[in-house]
Structure formats: C-alpha cells, structure tokens
Length: 482
Figure (cartoon, rainbow, N blue to C red):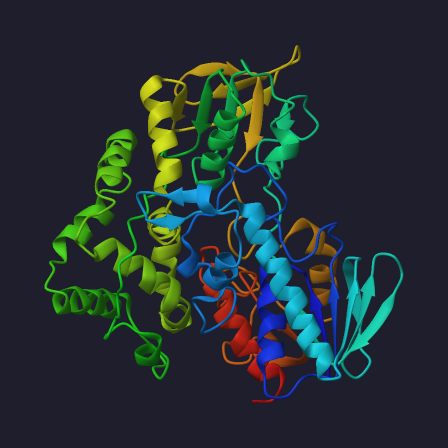
C-alpha cells in the first residue's frame, strides 16, 4: 500500500512514528508539504528562547502509548538546565527545541520504515487538487501528479484570520510566528495592541519583554479573560471516566460525564464543589485577581483542575462523538473558553511574567473590542467602550477548530467538488469515527482519511501532542488493515 500524507506537522510525525512501530509496513509513504521547514508545523519553528512550550514533558510526547518518549529525548541533551520552571518542577523548553524533537522523531521513523523496504519520499510542494485512479492521484501546485492508494489529510489549523480587514496596513502583523522575525521590527516604545488574550498573546507579551520592550502592551478581546494557570503535575489514575469505559458505549450524556468526574474526585476523597466553583467563575472573576489566585494555587492539593485537564485531553476525544449534538453545541458555545483554558493552561513561568506586566501597568486587558481600523497617518484606532490608538497590531487569534487552513483551501474545494468529502453541519468535514474516512452521504470514501481538527468528529479545542499521537496510532492500524 502506498500512503500519501498531506501535511508535515506534528500529526504527520505521529503517523510516521506509528507506521514505523506497526508489525507490517506499507509499501511506500509520500509526505507533501510546501513549508520551508518540515516536521515542525506552525508552532514549533526556529524562534526566540522566550517562546516556551505550554506543557511539561510528560504531556508532550508524540509517540502513542509512550508518555516518556519526549522526556528520554530531553535527557540526552545537555542544554536544558536553564529552562526549569520552579513552580512546576519541570523543564519548559523553547518551542524551537520541541520542533527539533519532532524533526528527530520523524527522521528516526523514516529510517525505520526504509529499513523494512518501505519507500519514503518527501515532496516539498502543496497538494492543490486530486483525481481518481483506483485510489487517489495527488496534484501539487508545481505540476506533479502522484498516485497513492490511501491519502491522509493531516493539516493543522493554519494562520490567524484577519477579522478586521487590516492586511497590508503598515504596522499590522497577521502572523506573529516566528517571533524572531516579527518582534525585532517593533520600536521599543511603541504601543502594541494584541488581538486576543490566549496563549499566543501570552507568547507575544513574553517575547516583547525578553526583547526589552518598554512601551504599553494591550490585549484586546471580547471577554478579556486570560488562560488558566497550570498546576504542578500530580500522578492521577482515573478509574471511572477512562477511554476504556467510554469506548464501548454508543452514546453518553454531558450529565453522565459530570457524574463520573464526581466519582473520580470522591475516589480521591475530594469535593466536587471546589472544582465547580473554579469552572463557573472562570469568566466572571476579575482576570488579574484570578491570575494572582491561581498562581498562588500552583501547589494546591486539590486535584480537580488537574483531573479535568487530563480527562479532556485523554478521554474527551473518545467521548465527544458519543455526545448528543445538543450537548456538543452547548460545550462549543457556552463553555468553549473554559474547556480550552482548562485543557491548555499557561505555565507558571509565563503567568508570572503576565502578572508582573499587569501590576506595573505596562500590560492592560481591554474586553469588548468592536472595531479596529488603520489610521490614514499611521497607527490604528481601537473601539471598545472607548476609542484609543495603538502603533502596532499583532493578530493572536488562532483559527477555531474545523477551519480549513488557507493553504489547504484549494484541495478541500477539489474534494468537495469531486464528492470525496462533504461539510458537516456543525463544522469541519464529515468523517467516519472508526476509520477516519471522509464521508459523503454517509458513505466512506475509499481513498481519503483525515487526522486532526478538520475532522467533524474531533473536539473543538486544539489537539495536544499525545492526543494527535493516539489518533495517529489508531489511524495507522486502520490503514494497515488491523
């Protein structure tokens, strides 16, 4: 079997690693991507050291079933001593170093596959179309046509969208990464407005600080909320809300999931109300007070937030397609920021930087943004409950789940036109939850599979590396007929 993988980010690395670990290898694998740097995706390109990963090593492994894989890779290096987050007791390395881990993992998997006789090729060009010929013929933007038996759409979410029509305006930065390229051009005393207040905005503020920025920084968003603060890791072994308990079921309700979280906490001798209060006040508690309180609770003995984060990451992808659409709709709309904040919190290292900037007055949070316009003489006008100006605007609003990346739009359009795929009413592309095959009118396409957040059956939050690895391993088994 010849497998074509469209995309060379973390999803592709996880799939290559899973294929290399299988008891029988495909005949050939071809990876397609027009990126200058392979295997790193958007987030892990070479960048400044201030841009750190947002999770400790035990939850950053890209190898399915092996949470210590990244830790072992780090243990072989002698350049990580300066990256210890004392609050977590774990190293938080620069994202560029994690990108090197992804590169090394991909290269090791390719070497292992080639040792079995599998032919592995990389085509550094975007796939923009396809045609049928038994399986699929993938057409690249530079005119190549490569026939494959199975094609995997493994692209990320793409670059931020320009919701305010600022593209081309002097001082507007639509894609902040890598910060090594975007931050040096910003004058030290400039007033920088950052659209969004999530993890990317935190990266930008930390990066500006590391560059000695002295001017004001303002996070503009609809709610003004900041991410949760990650707590020191605690060994937890859920017994009730596990993938093994949920997988055999065809349906599960949100109320049942809540009751299982209650059961997990009761098993630990801890109360549910502490967790419920933390969740229910996430968007009403003043954000600076909440940041200060959560930083002080990094060592909290209560396991609620740690447990919930683990369950969202590990069991969430299994439970999500089994929830009724009404429950999914409520979680996507009313609780999106809370679920996303719990599952992807900011590390204490960055939280301390944010609190220091907020306490000094250099960083401000401005909720209720309504409009941002470029000014004729330079700079920008921002309208929320007042009107104020900024010199530079950086877009830190990442695309939501189910959003087709800009570079993948021609291919997705070709899939829809050829009836190899169809959009799902809730967003993304319709997909068979067991085989990850694209669906049209309920029937699986024989050639196409999907991996990642473009699949309608995926959760509405960004898939973390272990989640991608688990999906990739499942897909590898399916592709190889197991």
